[in-house]
Length: 260
Length: 133
Ligand SMILES: Cc1cc2nc3c(=O)[nH]c(=O)nc-3n(C[C@H](O)[C@H](O)[C@H](O)COP(=O)(O)OP(=O)(O)OC[C@H]3O[C@@H](n4cnc5c(N)ncnc54)[C@H](O)[C@@H]3O)c2cc1C
Image (cartoon, rainbow over all chains, first blue to last red; front, side):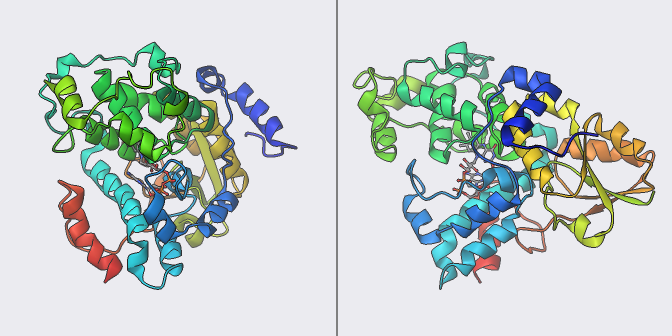
């Protein structure tokens, strides 16, 4: 039987580091995100559906940060939906938030149908490149956060430290790995699964497939302008590669560079 | 020993359907070493789950989930459904030795009928009217 009495979070972390040596060997950081229903209820109380709809694409937008709790059934999608509806006069004002909750339900239903098949390409790539053009392993500079791209390295640091990334950061990171570095989506998906507190094979792998284009009509990618806008320039401002980074240029130019 | 609530990583709430149906039953969570290894969990996920478990009335073990659950000697395991293939495999193994009652998880939406899952838009076309009337 494992212990249940701890004087502090530090004591708990030290105990678990001793019990789970392999996991700690992969990464022994402890997230500032605290587990448990109490914290989940604090986050539920803070849901603000209209502000969410207006700002969710921005890194410091009003997102809920409920994902680790929803992932583990600490709160249910139903509870999150009802809470959102209770905060607005007209349900439609909560439509954006509830649609995002629905994505989780959708991925879960697909997972039920696909099982371990989620690890394989669901459809052909739409990038015009053969599967063999993509590297099998995640390059070390990405996993260690030393690509030189301030944004990407910051995402890796945050992921390793907190186990959470904003949805847009997940999309940019996945696009960077798959399209700008030509690495198989599975390699990136495994890296996320290892570090995300909300790591979930359904939402994670199918989102990676969506970025890669094996589960969508076209590949998802971004340019620097897009990233700069939704991050309020916080990375580009201090990036030595600004003006000459991989993401520079129009979508047409990047499409030409990445996929022809 | 009678019923035992089997807590797994998809149902960690004190008001989950298993606790609701068997409020007197004891509960057990096993950190399954095979799962941790196959998903390559890092320490932070384990701390997060552990903190969640400390708010629940349950025993906590680590090792092989099937072995640990069977070692309790429970005559029946009660749990909440999950779609994960790992969960389904554990259920199959457990059922060879013990009765397992699987209660449905709380649904996001009460939709009866089949859903076309080819794309989110098709799914949403059916589900949206149920939620928004
Ligand atoms: C490459 C990639 C990998 C991802 N991996 C995971 C994962 O392993 N686990 C996971 O839960 N989500 C994953 N997502 C989806 C999404 O990024 C996160 O759910 C969301 O960012 C969590 O933050 P939040 O709780 O503040 O979200 P909010 O925007 O506040 O949304 C509320 C809830 O809705 C659900 N949700 C929102 N957006 C999505 C989405 N696009 N897909 C599925 N569910 C969504 C989540 O449960 C979330 O907690 C991934 C997305 C991408 C692009």
